[in-house]
Amino acid sequence: MLLQSLVHLASKLFIGGLNWDTTDAEGLRNYFSQFGKVDACTIMRDPAGTSRGFAFLTFEDPNAVHAVTAREHFLDGKSIDPKRAIPREEHLRNTRYFVGGLAPATTSESMKEFFTTYGKVVDATVMLDRESGRSKGFGFVTFEDAANADQLVGKNLVLDEKQVCVYVMLLLRSGLTVSLD
Image (cartoon, rainbow, N blue to C red):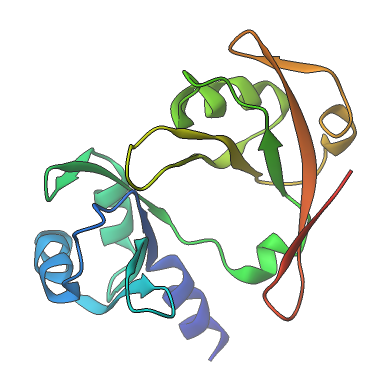
């Protein structure tokens, strides 16, 4: 049973950066089926039923996840960002940080590159405005572990020539998140 759970976790993808018009889970499933048999595909939606711009997809074979993450993907006219899904339990280790005060030119890639000096970055995402596609001025970075938290929180960090503020994100059992400085 434990082995089956581990295989399931290793077979699950988070797919970020979806076009807001990508609302058909079957189309997403069809695209990713070129990498292996897809067991499940869910586009996440808000209470009104509108796409939240990301999805979760589970393959039958964990090797398909490696095949997907080894290359770039474009779907519905937009570059998408598939990566191994991080179980909620991993977020409870306080490895996710809110990064505020980002420069307009800061991208997810430049933020990830900046934070790699503080540890292995699992994910870095600059939040974008749905209408304009411009940065909202904040984002999130997730590390493999919390070993360097003291080097991040409350420090004078400068990213893309702008001072940024970093807060630890805590995922509560209710699903709500809070930031602590």
